[in-house]
Length: 323
Image (tube, rainbow, N blue to C red):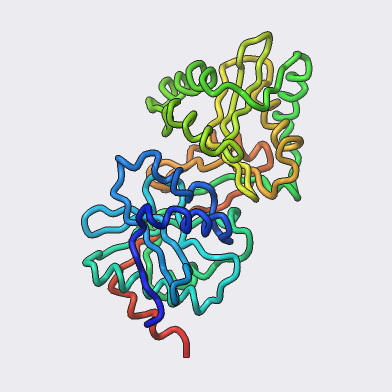
């Protein structure tokens, strides 16, 4: 471990961090510094970088509260981000160096969010094993519903009937849709009425992010006679098209089914996965069954998203792994 050095991220490392993310085997654009910092006023950043002989070997997007370090709470998921080519031994040493650094800086607990495996560009289960060695506590598990696009199941009979209904109308699918009309006319009113909440991103925030990441954040709308009936905001990665937001007005024209059918069978047919996101409530302990069933009716299957609590002092256990 003597050749490994851990440093806190600062703007001096901006280009090196982002280049590393771009070429990693288990990262998405959410780990780009511009995305992480659009709401930097809400979190005390404590992202870490691990170097070996001055070469960057791993990064950990994170923020800190008191004596607890979190896989960044402003992101949907987290990870120990690794290069496209790395050895298990290097990852072991990186995690050992990270936890020893935290221990030396009086951090007691690391709340670690795993990256759902559908986002990995190649197998990247090093942390799964090391979490076991560290006696990490799995305290939350969300279920995200996902369609494997190379092995799709057929839509349910209900979905087929809705698509047949949609074909009776001259619906207009817009691939570069207006976010403002979707947010103000559909998304915000629906979330307020049904759940008493607002979107995680304000309209100004999502427009800002869209301008920064136009190749990764897309808006799709379905209109009829000039009126928006349904829409969705998609976060794209190399493998995955993820529905960040989706909503519709009450109508009898099958607009939402038409929208999803266009995305699955046309727009994203060459992706590996089409991800609807989670249906969980109460920190993973409950599932909204109606929402779950709706996603399953399109042929989606579960992918888990795990959250662990690591006692930093357990870093010593990693020294005994290799024999």
